[in-house]
Amino acid sequence: MKTTSLISACLLAALLAPSSFALTTTRRVDPGYLRDHPDEFSVSVARGEEGLIEFTISHNVARPMYHVARLAIIRDGAVIATSDTPLYGSRRGNKFHFSLAPENLPESRFSLSDSAFSGEGENRIPRPGSIIHQFQLRDFVPPELLRPPARK
Image (tube, rainbow, N blue to C red; front, side, top):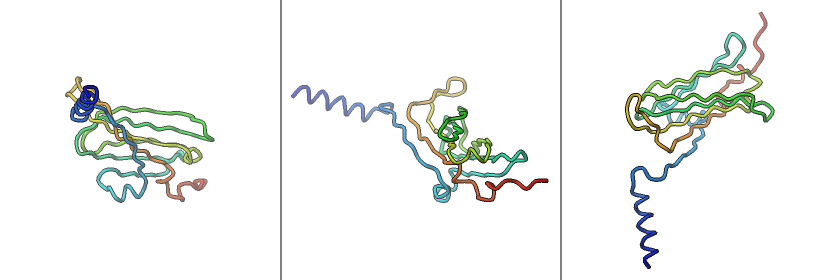
């Protein structure tokens, strides 16, 4: 009986503690998600002068967050390159810019994690637990941008 009471008490304390177990969740962001959440994200896509597909992803949040942007360029199932960019962001206008070759679009991914943080200035520390927003980049590219550019 005492063991059951002790386990119950520990479980209750863990559930009620403000900094108990951290939870990370994953959310897919696609054009439908953007339509349903127009103030949270926007994605703009254009063809650059070099023929690369240029992306700008803007992200607004309810309170300043610690973000980690991760770009994974994948081709034929192999990771060619990754880039991880941490940022203590603001509430509005967190922008992430990158570009890649059209042939790398089908498998490449971008993800953006949001985490709360404690402290201020140089004493800011990200708290455990995140929401990871996953983007399949090809979902945002209009078909006309995938055609080879006209030669000059």
